[in-house]
Amino acid sequence: MHADPFFLSDVAGFLGGYFAFLAVMNGIFALVLWRSYGQTGRALVWTVFAGAMMILSSLALSGSPSLVPALPDGVRGLVNTLSGPVLYSLGTVALCTVLFVFRSFFVRPMVAWTLFNAALVLMGLSMADQNFALIVMKPDNVPIVGLVFLLAFFTWVATKQAVVNDERIARGEPPMEKLDDEKVLVWPDLVYTELICMVAVSAFLLVWAICLPAPLEEPASSVKTPNPSKAPWYFLGLQEMLVYFDPWYAGVVLPSLVIFGLMAMPYLDFNKAGNGYYSIAERKFAYLTFQFGFLVLWITLIILGTFLRGPNWNFFGPFEYWTPYKVEVLNNVDLNQMFWVNWLDMPLPRAAVDAPWYSRIATVLLRESPGLVVLGLYLVALPPVLAVTIFRGMFVKMGFIRYMVMANLMLLMLSLPLKMALRWTMNLKYIVTIPELSLNF
Image (tube, rainbow, N blue to C red; front, side, top):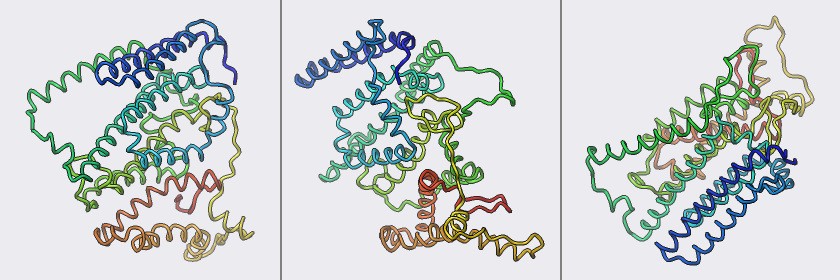
């Protein structure tokens, strides 16, 4: 776990500038708090923090590898140990739950600024680890790191607006959007704003292209496949799904269901509150469903595929060396084998080669009966049970057809984390497998 002294010497200049930037940023922030808002106490706190960042910058620029700020070896080893897929998934769900329950606290600007700086400091200290830096500073991955921070920022902005509106609505006041609904002209108001943004973004991309060259590799060759061979970042969530499902389901059915679900959403939604303004309290079910599907089932899979999936598509910790010789023995079994062989200690039902077609069909149905029963209970029996219990009010308002469409879309969405958990905990490969038809679930 000890860092390479030569690497620390190379990265010292970058870390020095990085922590100096944090010092200047928080120094300006402290000055604004003091001069514009008169918050002397908070300004003093952030001034002290800026001074601490300058000390870290000086240590990094000292030229001594032993003085470069870095996370302790024990902390990095603990993070690698806790970075398994189960804890990673449970951690992301727990984090989203905490942020939702205590959203009124986390949307406070000072709390958000504190967490933002904590994330930046943690990333800076992690940069002193060679394995972490090689992954995060890879030209392909630098934009993804920026997108993670941008996503967090815009999620915070939207949540803050929703919390403010919910508090106003609870007091009987109109939402903020109703206070400033004056219409403006597309020309020149909107066009000028878009023009300025276009010029600024073009200049930023030009500087980016000069400072961070594109990671062009040699021409593709069928005899030399990169390891790991990864899709573009926006498809890494889909590539992760291919680990747990058959390609036809993960690559065709699930994406089609996402598109169909987005198209069907306006017809399934019976709640007219929250139209035209941000709100969480008035649309909790829709908000939680979207955030779970987008953040937990898509964004976290992209992060997992980018930073935690290494050679041979093995799972690596953030500070772990990506060695192609890491071999994980996985004995994945289908549910039919688990039921007949492992639990009942019987061979799988098989039909004779010369058996009639109806006998072969009956044998396949008998062999796959455990999986078919599980799918039937999950997709057919569970929606009515939910309709008379948890979703009783929704069933009354939506009607049978709309409710069944909504319930099955939701259950199919939940099938992804459930299947992932079954693979990680029980090494379950497929619930139903019919090789005679190349059909697997």
